[in-house]
Length: 205
Image (cartoon, rainbow, N blue to C red; front, side, top):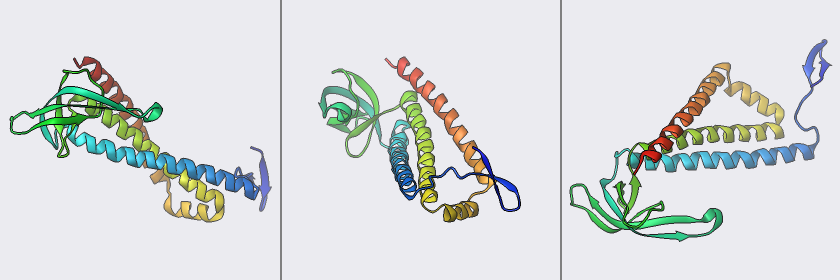
């Protein structure tokens, strides 16, 4: 980008933001859409994965075995989803459920170590599902940061001067370093947990 002269001969760079009103509005709407999309995916996915994590680590729910009896597939395309149902018996034999469910596809007769919640839904336990959810949480954290950054960018595009002032008041080099370390940690964590999860799934019978 070509530098231009401004005030007392100090060189500054020409603004990269769209100069026309229509350009600013278009850019802001696009960044708003991306921000809302990634923020929603990051926050919503993180909550769902964290909820499942407490079951795959046996911190909540009832431990037991689920024997698959039948599987039902609904929807089509990206909305296609399979749920399997079967007989659940807790490890202490005090709880049984003849129509317990799990959100995966398995062959009839498969016996799975699971954790059952109060509603009768079961979650796989062990290294593979736990590592997979942890990898997902790392990805959700990155998506959330990207979404929030895009939302801030949309605001700054519409009101650049006010956005710059707010950014200068809320942001600092130290905050940037902390965020950078967090994103690097999430990237490393995603890679490690993803590899662990894949190995765990391959090791499962």
